[in-house]
Length: 250
Image (cartoon, rainbow, N blue to C red):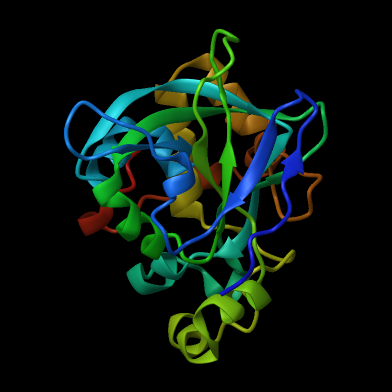
């Protein structure tokens, strides 16, 4: 397994740090009302949708909007679930999912914040295996500084995946689909997934919607999603297959 990386200092004076993937994020666990502890989660893509969060985790507590500073959203990697579900457009490289990566002091993103039971963490780590996991302290949407660290899925690289899980797992997840590079700056967003995220953000209100359009970028790190959709309005008409309509309906 990879060693935990150095703490990342942010301009606010707080410190973000990388979490391991073998101890259920015990560094940021806190007590809940029941026997099981809680872990805070940052949602920045499909998890902007409370419906998606509720269908992903066994229980979701205190779902609300917040803000994370010094990060930006990027469509820069292939999600294996898109390949498995047949919604990736491999021939045009329209198969990217979302991550976040460190930005500048000017960068901030409106996100969802919620708590999950510690019992859900192992499945969360397995499901999001391609990411690194960063502990951050988001602000509430009204600007109130957050009290607790939350986990946020951070951009990674192919080499890290192989170091964590091995070449055989990498080949099984990606190689069988002809994917030679998972984290790839030539990728474009998976249309069905992008539409889902846009709809989810829109349902959460103007601040979330504008943040998604203006603070989310293609893998070129220059083109915003607002600009991309101006050129590709057809994406908002990219309906998922019938059996996935509910799952990818915002």
